[in-house]
Amino acid sequence: MKLTSMRHDLSQKSAEVRQIYAQRDERVKEIADLECTISELEDQQDESSQSRERLSRDLDTVEREIAAKEKELRDLLPRLSASKANEAKLKQRYPLLKKLN
Image 1 (cartoon, rainbow, N blue to C red):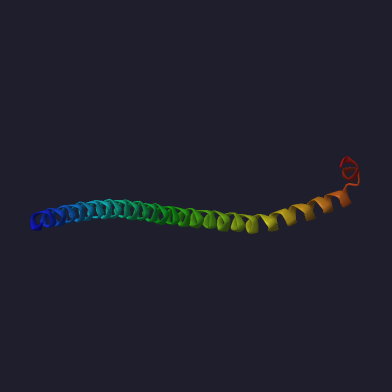
Image 2 (cartoon, helix red, strand yellow):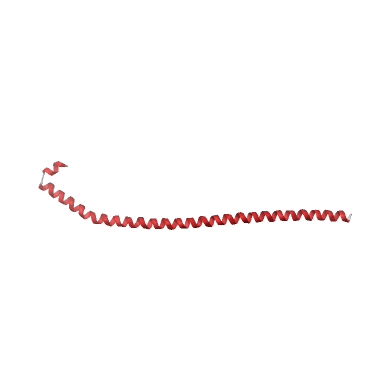
């Protein structure tokens, strides 16, 4: 009877050990999956950071171009006004020019 009981206990303990190993293997797999996820998130964060930096540089470039065009416009406006004023004087002086438009 004692031998049968011991064999039964041994069988139970073996089953418990197998279950523990299976749980351990599952945890190792979960850890590996989490490490992959973390790695992917870090890569995405790096890409996002690089993209943000690139977009910031692009924005700076566009803002400089806008500032340059605004300066160019400010420089041209007085000349345009002077040309329009000159055109108006010429049209007053030479009435036939009014009919050409």
